[in-house]
Length: 131
Image (cartoon, rainbow, N blue to C red):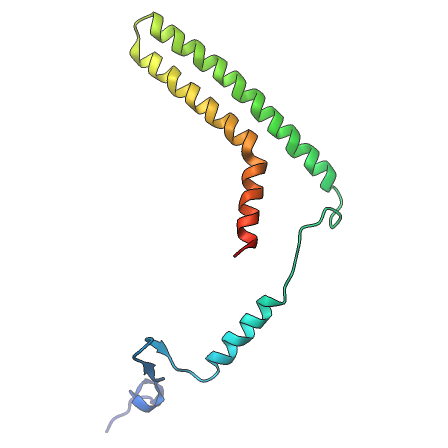
């Protein structure tokens, strides 16, 4: 006598059919759910605003100050790296000269990223709006 519970028995009629052409489950209601999700996303239209929260203008001021500090630190790093590069080149120390060159490149890359941060964010925001 088989005492296996009903929910563990293998019943082929209870399993959903698989469409061989698309390899997806053919469940009732899937098409309605997909259509409902498509119509839901088509009706949403949200744009950023500057009046939604208090303190937005202060936050912009803080971000601008942080960008300024970042650029000042990039200039300082460029000066220090150039000095290290010069000492390494004049003292016949290739390791020190290599570190100075790397520092110059990192400082320049940092300055580019700080200066282009707003433009990059706006570019990717525009790309995201077209999706």
